[in-house]
Image (cartoon, rainbow, N blue to C red; front, side):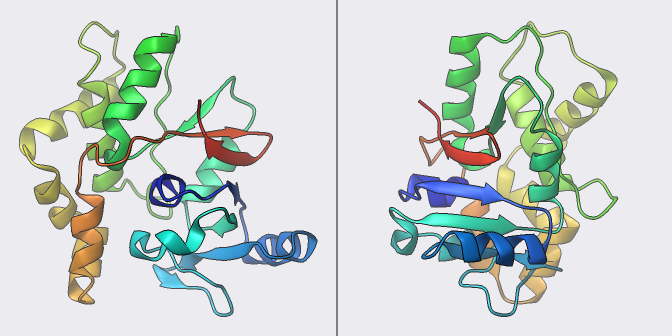
Length: 200
């Protein structure tokens, strides 16, 4: 999503199911359907879940996205006061927004993989948390913060993660490398009324 927004995607609609994505696509002619199940592109969709597919092709486009965990986690947060979308890719921009707006509380949601913890999510959360030295941390926050000491470089964490190893095993090293970049994108996604747009 961050890669798509940084390449000029206009709106992203995160949805929970494949059926919901297809139904919404019928109501939004011209929208691109993107997403995955078990890491693979969904049959009949325009895009998979590889960030390498979300380049110039998505500029000015409306995207409808469904993923195994990520879009489900986003929709679960839709009643929160504010929902920002972040990754290692836009870490610096996300930190800048949070420092500027200084929320009283911050809940960092890691989507995981099915019902399991995902190392890459926890590592990214830890990198965000370490930017707020004076924050009062939960035990979970302290736990993921520790990952930043175990893996001093993002690429090491993503290559060690189960999902990273699966991608590497499929020859998709370029995707792991892309996602290992820290602060290469200056856009932050913000979800409002179920739609993600570039935050201002």
